[in-house]
Amino acid sequence: MSQKNSTFRGAHPTWANACVGDNGSPSYVEYSKGFSKAANMLIAAVLKDRSLHLTTDVFVYPICFNMRHSVELRLKGAISALQILARLKNREIKFDFSGSHDIYKIWQFFLTESEKLDNRFKTINIHIEPTILDIAEVDPSGQTFRYPISTQSTKHLTEVSLINFVVLYKKFRDLEAKLDELLRLYEWLQDEYSQGLFNILQRNEIFYLAMELPRRETWNNEAFTKTKNHLKIKYHTSSTGLSKILNLIQNHYTLAPHIGICKPLAGITPTQLLHIIDIWIESNQEIKTPQTQQDEGITITFAELLSETISDNSSWYDLENIATPELTAGLHALFYFAYDYAFTEYYESLYSRYASEINDQANIDQNSIQHEFMHVFDKSNFLHHIIQSLYALGHHILAEQIIAHHNIEHAFHWLNEARSGSLFALPVFAQYPKNPTEEDKYIQ
Picture 1 (cartoon, rainbow, N blue to C red):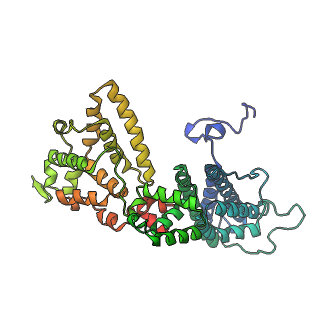
Picture 2 (tube, helix red, strand yellow):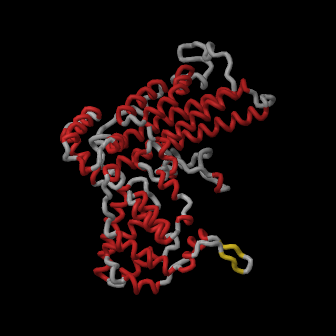
Picture 3 (tube, rainbow, N blue to C red):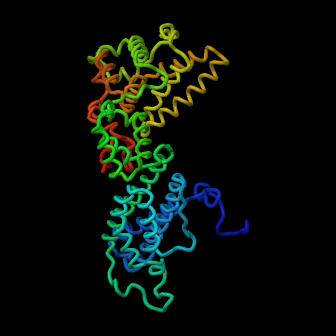
């Protein structure tokens, strides 16, 4: 396109310039958002005006066109995301994006391919389909609301007669919400597939399977042979496949507790961790008193003290004898895992990364161990993060031991949720959680 185009160009004021093309790199989803927002704004304006000046008869066409086009783009964006998921499973999904405009065919393609790839798409697809089919019935190819006459010279919408804006508003907003859930689902699945461990069964299926297993010490019993045969039939897997799954379960932080195993923490032992926490508590003396304190009329709660106190570097003298590069990396992994504990594999990758980095630094400068150790130890949320990670990694007993020994149960409002399982219950088991506390409602 000519750089001298007088209409589609940048100008002042700069805030009014939209970034497009390579300057914006929008996806199908970003394109669709513009059309859907335009439709919603127009509907809201017409309803507010009560069709006095902004009449329904005039605005129905641009509104419905924008709605329909937005949905087409969202479905193509979903297919594009599906292709990424398929590649993570060493599969390929081909689709003609430029040549496909029939919304019914686009939907049928997505419906079939998504459920073939992962059965967790079924739930959201059921909710999306009715409105998609309504759109496909009235405007399959995107021509109905663009022109009054079809390419076959027949008048459009003769079988519809009336379109209510309130119904449009409710139906489209609900569809958008469900399409947003679909977006969260394939974003979640992309993270899940990227872990690269679950290539025999789907991750959620392996969690179901793990919950059917007896404790590990009973696996040599004759009854376990019957259990394995039952599982092979139920989950359509071979003896070799089941053996791989059983090995995976035994070595997985979230799954191992289901069979009575607590996988050891990386780089640090429970005894070492308890010692470190004792010193952290000692160096933060004021948090040992759980009562509310009064100072010149200012009320200071225990929780506030816990979040604000910072330890003194003098603690290092009690810690330097145990602070090896491996232990320091283990402490880093425990602390930072609490920021993103959706997948316990992330904890192991954190430890590997920190172990490599801290070892490399220690070979150059021995003093770097103190810096790296105290960087985490001096955090005001150190104890909170450590306990949170312990729960997420299946080390409930160790977490409870710390809480009871230091009488700090009242400091963490989420403990009851953690104990009941709603905070950390099978985080990777979720279908498409918006945050970890909501995951259990997606277990189905």
